[in-house]
Image 1: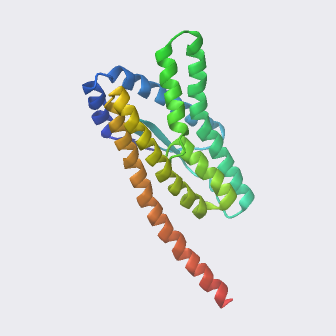
Image 2: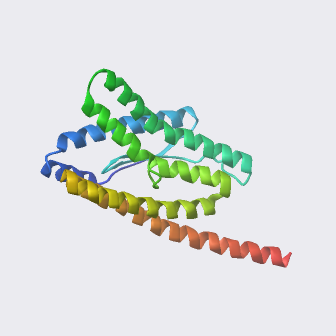
Length: 218
């Protein structure tokens, strides 16, 4: 199992310390860990083994190993694998919603706010957030892997552009500078995914050409 700590977590902590919101950042990371524990527990229950754990600036990322007996060209097995991954992904935000309801009755508004924020943030249809991955898995079932990547990548850029515009308005009203750094970090993720998509596109186009040649020769 691979374990990594992204040094940007320390940069983000310093930024929140400067804007006097370090307590919010600590709470955010605490409930983000609980969020990932639900992913982890669900994945283990469904029979997956952990491939890697990464502590990132805005949470933790857990990757599971693909099970060889399920990942193949047979559509039914591939779709079943995607459905199980959707269940794993959705359990993270579900955990935060449950925690928010619990603390709502305990009249702890700050904890409720943080958990609602984490749930909404993770359900955004932006890859690699939970919402983006869920969208990608649903699209894989409907359209296949390459089309899923293509549509997800387009949605990533559109949604992120809308969020940036809304965040700009929010900054004007709230004067919360931490929002700027969160948006910058999210664009960093989007740019990484755009580069990955370009590489995947080359890969699929290459094998599509080979498949055409093979059919022609037959």
